[in-house]
Image (cartoon, rainbow, N blue to C red):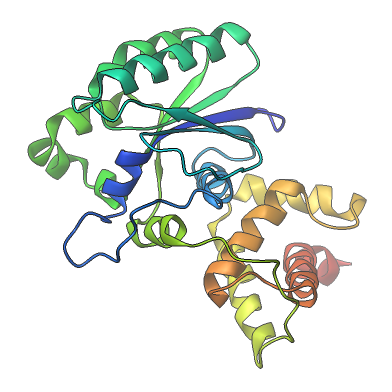
Length: 268
């Protein structure tokens, strides 16, 4: 996958609610899903599954208009009577076909469990696109899933990649309520150690090729590559339980450069 690869995500709100376990009896009430942070989550998940990729847009398929305005998102309203998902399949299939015909997308991420999408997914693959399916941890135990939910398992098996997000992380993002402007709070005590742990975990997750690429790229940059910066900021936010303030972001980026360039420094 080229470094300048482009991705589009097509997400069924009902499916995301299901894999986030928000319909279970003990789940927190969330009548209206929040999609303000979905692009950030999807970008992070794609980076882990595919590598460096630019998320161009998220298409959000839902039965109700939440009247939220999100950058790089398109809302696709479905009829409330779409009990069998036929309208969803028709709309999502039409959007996939239009994206394939446009020829400007390299990766499609499908967030749905309807195996009627298999035909349009295969058409996209034959046209040269990588087709991924979003799933939770259950997709990591495919033999068991094939017994418990064979239709969903079939869809997942036909994907080029299975993009995994933890159900708890997805539930947190979908249940988050949009607030006012973020405040630049004073850094919490011990935040540097917490952020360094985030950086080290990020570094351990990288492949050897990604590490070598960063070691070559970073000396020519003042900061971090955009996709790396987004990944680290999301990890930092999850670790701190809130958005990082300006000072914490600077520390996180500085630590990431130090960790990545440490072999060069030590060998100089």
